[in-house]
Every structure is written in C-alpha cells, then in structure tokens.
Image (cartoon, rainbow, N blue to C red):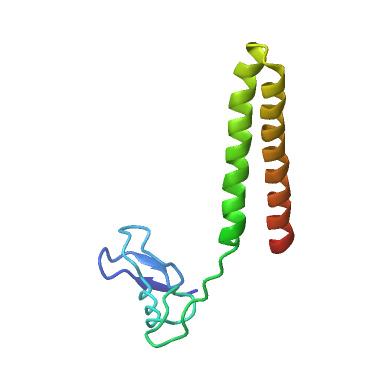
Length: 117
C-alpha cells in the first residue's frame, strides 16, 4: 500500500483510503450513476414492459368479508341490550346473527388464505 499525498491538506495517506483522515476529502472518484432504467434502479425505462398488477383478493371476497364483519357487529351490539332487557327470543336471534357473521368471516378468511397460499 503506497502512500499518496492529499491534495487539500498535504498529509500522507494510504492509496486505499476512501477519504483523507485529516480533512475528510474523498480520495476515490464517485461511482458513475446507473443509466436510467438499468437493473437495480427501480425505474422502468420508457417503452419497457408494463408493470404487472396482481390483485391478491377478489372484490367479491372483500365484499363478503365486509358484510360478515357487519353481521357480526350488528348481532353483537343487538344481543347485549336484548339480553339485559330479558327479551330471550330476540336475544337468541341476535346471537345467531352475530355468531353467523363470525363463522362467515372465518370461512371467508380461510377462502382468502386458500386462494393465495
């Protein structure tokens, strides 16, 4: 490793040093920038292939998931006051709606997992 002289502070430094330890001047020229659209830049060149958009979950499954959450919330919110007011039959119906919504949600999540691994 030969020693070279720093052009700014005139100290002797190693030729392998990326910067001068005395003044901090970069000793090696900066790497040339990658050309536009080159691999590793994350930029698609003009006229290149269009990016592929893959929708992971279909809109039908997303809608069913939202509806199942709604059914669970409606059933749960309706169940508690009906149970407190001692309305047994409506409370059972609300529990069935809430439980059905929960089972529906679990089924939809399994279907989403099954289709997308």
